[in-house]
Image (cartoon, rainbow, N blue to C red):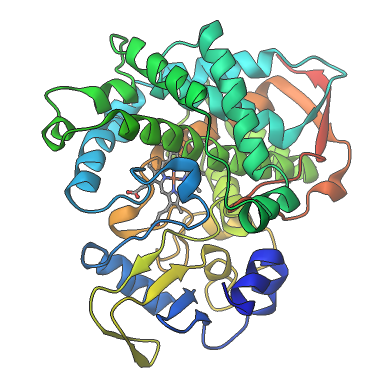
Length: 418
Ligand code: HEM
């Protein structure tokens, strides 16, 4: 790692903010082979269009956590097979069959809150989102599952819960810690025991002996890598977005009332985006200013390409900065201002607004995430009143690669509405 990469790793957000208006819209992080952080819209559009011809080397820091077989970075036929198996249930009508399960899980957590209680907002949304994805991946949550999820949370907190600790793992202890064999085994056992549930668990689809993955021969270690990847990617991200959206709504009383008025016009507890355009715009704007995933997966050139005004050799790595793409003056007027109105009746191009990435690696859970976010935010707004205890703690900060509010940011429940 050279000094530029080190500066970026140690002081990521100040480093990125200092480059926000750089006309070149990319930073050269390393030379041989070249490694670029890019937020130039033309280059992003090219990358997503050419994605099938690019390689996708995994994140150096996250690889030890989720394993070499993780669907987050495996390429070729195996990647295609994962998307064939997991894509359809996570969108459209099949996703709708999971809506009651998601809504039930969210309402359980909202109903457990008591007037007078103070909660750490980001920890609470992580708890809710982990239970949702665990039900989808593993099935019903009994005591054994709850215990495994607690250990999963402790492991992720140890790896990513504090920036200094994460950096200490990466630079002093040889990398982020892998989960223990005991937790891995318990997750695999839970995945196997939830195979008969309806609607089918995501794990049961991975294990389907007649599915496309069976032909490729899935080893036991593969299943562990997919389980921890899905549990992680499916909850840290959505939880961050939920926390930022709820934070914004708690800060702006008029906006909260407007969203609530919109919600009062529907009784649906799992509203579609078209039924709640303002709520969807608030979520979209939260995803713009605080994208839970600040960089897309790495892309690597398989042959030389002319980009950004010069030719780069085979082996060049391109990493898209979602954070900086979302903060460009020519993409978003007054880009640092929180303004959901910019998403009402308008849709920015995917090369400028890409919270879920793009191309062949576009987030598999984007529709699930948006549905879940609408359910979480509407459940909280409809059932509770809460106020921020310490709004100043809502500063942007990183938890691993994710942009999540600090655990110090707290809300106090002041009343229940229904
Ligand atoms: C607000 C919530 C979420 C955000 C912002 C988000 C963002 C992203 C981003 C930026 C990528 C990389 C895309 C690229 O490199 O082009 C990604 C990949 C992925 N996400 Fe999400 N994600 C969210 C929720 C979820 C959920 C709920 C799931 C659950 C299934 C999920 C599963 C995945 C998977 C499996 C990939 C890898 C896709 C592949 O490589 O083919 N994500 N996500």
